[in-house]
Length: 418
Image (cartoon, rainbow, N blue to C red; front, side, top):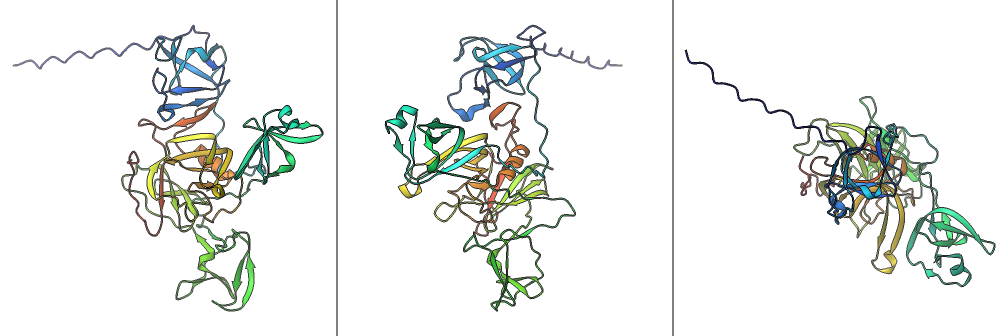
């Protein structure tokens, strides 16, 4: 009888990495805001970084790598991901920074953004110091400028905003903005998909309703009022929303679900944006969990269709354009920004409240509450204390599909395949 072949010995598990600090060191704290790198080397391309963490963030040290590759001391690997040069780290006996509690879909905070923003009026001027103000050594601000105040200063009895960009701008030349309190709808099996009123001709005005299709006026409906479709005219141009009350189909935004892109993993989270209806859905697999109105690109600045993935998320991101003078803009500190296609992003719009109407320069504008919620819900997850995070092959960002009636099944872009 032939004996069975001997089993190959099982290799021992690799030794655990040696801790870089004594046992009493529970975390390393950033002395300044600093990049977190994917490898123990300085990456000049910020899209190859893991992210950016703010000063004071504490992270658990995992192991060390030798100095070099742009670091004068050791490289320290930190949890949950990435490497930081030891020159900006301070060992600490305190625990790592904790995650904030997850956001609920319903957010009733009356202050959608806890910051003061303003739009600079025409003929506004920016100064750097009080002496510059007194000697009128400033620069003219041309085009549209939106700023965030970090303080208010009085110079010769006149109030000035000190902006996050370091400028002093006269308060009389700033119109204080009140961000929208709009928010979408959390969905479950019992929640009907919403249908909203939206005036496509004049988004500031209510919508006229008629006693019959093309008949006499019978009332007005508020912008973003939710309605139900009772009947549709034969030509599809009119919708009856109540007895004796008809509105034009072009003044209605209908949220309709759609099948996911091919190859999506079961339960995977993804966004679907309908350019025709100006509606965004958040899905988990085939199940819609949230829906809201957005503002995509206006004529001449169309939001491109396609299937991509979020590749970068920033707690705040400033945006500007150096196009023709009438289109020049500089918008500071846009909260909860998610880049998904080149320079196109899903982001807060704190400067308008016209969601449901196309009006952006190509990005997908979200109301602050929606942006904050969807930023926390989407991938890649933002580690505690970080201000930016980047997706990679191991931690891909949430899939984003942008479609229209002309392109109902847009193609997958590079890196978007599930």
